[in-house]
Length: 210
Ligand code: AP5
Image (cartoon, rainbow, N blue to C red; front, side):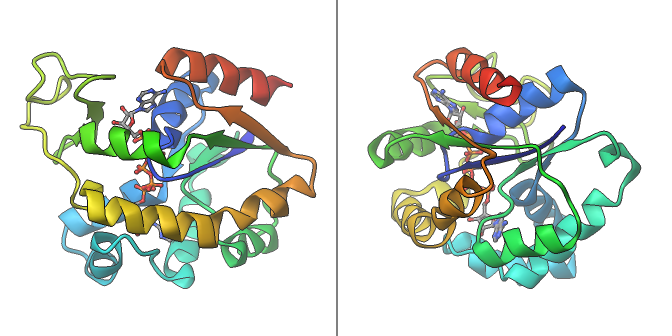
């Protein structure tokens, strides 16, 4: 199963990708996580991406296309994968087509902008292992440290309200046109993001199996 999860920043792509990945035994590939890891390790890619990410802008297409080409060549992708956060522009989708990747379903998780702002304000992440929480909807065990590795949770720089507004603008301008792109292929499934994570998961699985 080769899947793409589309949606605005904070719509819940990463949250759903994690659950569906476990259920279907396929890797979830987040370009955002790959870039953040590179940043943490101080690699050239990380340093190149930092200024774009911190400002809520998209990293240049050629950079993320190379990341995905390399990642999809890994053996664990042989039986399928979930792309979370890629493609994000029409040129990225065209590049994926040129790689000869046959996508089965594109799940678009829809959440209104007002709700997104609230979700981002409450998101906390683990700087060490990358686990993601929400102070209200998905708290860690003690609310302060990572339930998996014990590191102190932090807020992502790009989750500050002014940057979130910019990310939403970028999403509407550059990523939303992908709904048309994939709508034409008949592979697009719309899932309305629910208040409860489990409800969105149920609807996402139904959309994948439909
Ligand atoms: P990336 O890390 O991909 O960020 P994003 O797409 O903006 O998505 P998020 O991780 O913010 O949100 P999400 O939809 O995964 O939501 P989540 O599940 O965490 O990218 C960051 C940056 O990297 C970009 O801005 C760009 O600079 C660069 N980049 C990455 N890919 C790129 C590409 N292809 N091209 C160019 N640049 C690229 O949920 C959010 C919060 O809500 C969490 O706290 C969660 O617990 C909570 N939540 C989730 N579901 C629910 C629910 N149903 N009810 C209540 N709360 C919920």
